Amino acid sequence: MLSKSQIKLITSLKQKKYRQQHGLFVVEGVKTIKELLASSLKLHALYTTESFNIDAKLETIISPADLKRISFLTTPNTALAVFKRPEPKRIDSNNLIVALDSVRDPGNLGTIIRLCDWFGIKDLVCSKETVDCFNPKVIQATMGSVTRVNINYVNLEEFISSVDVPVFGAFMEGDNVYSSELPNNGILVMGNEANGISHEIENLVTDKISIPRFGDLQATESLNVATATAILLSEFKRRS
Image (cartoon, rainbow, N blue to C red; front, side, top):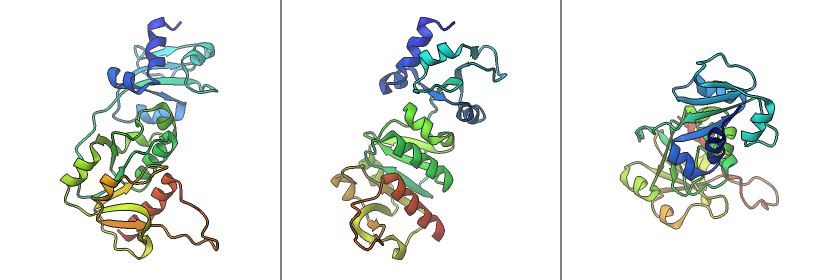
């Protein structure tokens, strides 16, 4: 049986302030849990209906009914794990860095983390207004990639100002990315879903780039930020 204190701790981790307070986050789904178990992340506790054959002190076999009580999903999987939040590592400015300026949607952030993993981007830098990467919905969307990307939350304006590299920003009115010079290192800034890149960060951008529209009517207002990130990273990496 799950204790009241266990249930209270797990359910509290749905909120950012408690994830920060306890230094923990929740992961659901066998595949993602196994990926994180194989990583350097430290397991705090595992609650499952079927044994993972790990340290018995960390694993608790529970009923599907108990799993439903603690799951954040509408349809619970067969396991829920609580991991310790890792400490971010130093940012390496010798490679291409992706920076997010107030990206708020968990699905977008999770997809962007997966894209960074796919395209070999080691550092993802997020403004403090960007959604927490340990939000349960973000973790679900990363499919384990959160373990392979170094994610830092910073004062974005201060960080960009402190690094002497080209700063590329995605804008509707920027230069065509397909005809722009793209170096191996630098910062690629992607903006908020509704408002794009803020004026403060725009002032630090050295190169405004855009993805051209090829549709006959040119009527599409904009691309989803994760979709745009995929296209831009593909072009950066194609040139490297």
